[in-house]
Amino acid sequence: MTAEMDIPTHKVLADEEFLPFKENTFDLVVSNLSLHWVNDLPGSLKQINNILKPDGVFIGAVVGGDTLYELRCSLQLAELEREGGFAPHISPYTAVTDLGNLLGLAGFKMLTVDIDEIEVHYPDMFQVIKDLQGMGESNCAWNRKPMLHRDTMLAAAAIYKAMYGNEDGSVPATFQILYMIGWKHHDSQVKPAKRGSANVSFGDIGKMKELSRNKPNS
Image (cartoon, rainbow, N blue to C red):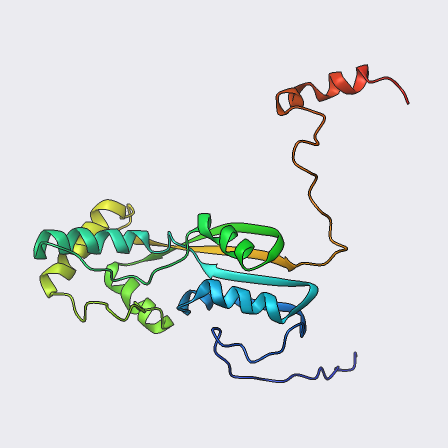
């Protein structure tokens, strides 16, 4: 039997937009699927960079912009058809094309951004909405429309099934997860080569074996 190790922990209830920690406090900051709820994502990322020690690392996962695109499109088409216009009914999410820029502007170096798409199947659109409510992931926009008419909801369910439905009658819901890694600057970190310092053209990449054979011995 192995003895259990007591790891000292300290719990703090804090707001991601107002982190109550001093500069250069942590070696590692981890955020898992919560930053899509903050109003000021660039500001939160800057605060995370600030509380990291030099050469500290931030590892995070955030909901991506293509999440629930099936539900979003179905609701928009139904509302446009039945009510002559549409309002947003899905929370706004970060696009993968913006995430790297946001991390760079926040001061992070040596960035890594990856994407994962998880497809979950439901009996119908109403079960998708019920699951989102249970997850606490309903539309977070303050100016959201308070309700949808019954006819609009029925039309959206029909559109959802017609456009995206599976052969067995179920419908998919796509959840896009964006993973990010960024390091706080430290002088010891590897630096990119200066622009124009390369001595091999991209056009010669396919000829690398031939070039290496013809290179004179030093």
